[in-house]
Image (cartoon, rainbow, N blue to C red; front, side):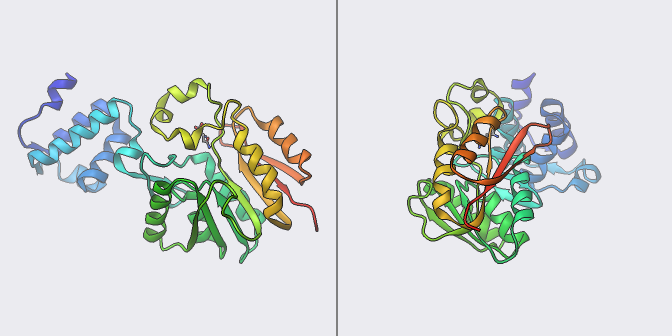
Length: 280
Ligand code: GLN
């Protein structure tokens, strides 16, 4: 069945192609592919079912469906992912922004007044940095150690007219100055976590996912060093793994942060923790 529909050799009607994609990958993802890759609007999908698609167009859709059937994330196939209200470009060089990471942005917005200086460590597609710079008058610096990730971030900044200063740096290595808030969604999955062999994670850059054997390596480094880059009374806000709450809280406390607080994500899993640098 699959092979048959894939070997289409003639032009076909839009309705027919859409229905076939729907049967293979479900209505939501079929819609995403048709609207994103074929430039057909949601309305046209229903009002222009009889529109004839040329062979190359039919093949573009079929190839995309096959990639999805092989497990590739829909975001990498379309090249886009929504984050809050932002339509962000993504590529296999960056982590696909997660719904729960929107919480990090919410927490930073709650904690930070306008005109503060914010550092986003491990920015990837730039999701957090761009969201912050769009929703508040903040001076945002975004750091990533991967040049290709910074290129994706730069594209997104351009597309959303966001003013973000980008720095290539291994965490704090090339960072200068102090910040009112430091935010990070670092790689925090343990190297032997079986989730790495499941779903979208199989296609995402390991450098954006894996936090060493324990998963805690980068979190530890960030929590430790951030204290030296925060203004007195500034906040460090981080995302962590579903089972890391106790270890992360201890790291914050051991390093002398105060007002340590946490928030659960939409699945009621502890996900975001923050604490205040001493000095005010
Ligand atoms: N939350 C991601 C997951 O799906 C991991 C992201 C990260 O390591 N920062 O497991």
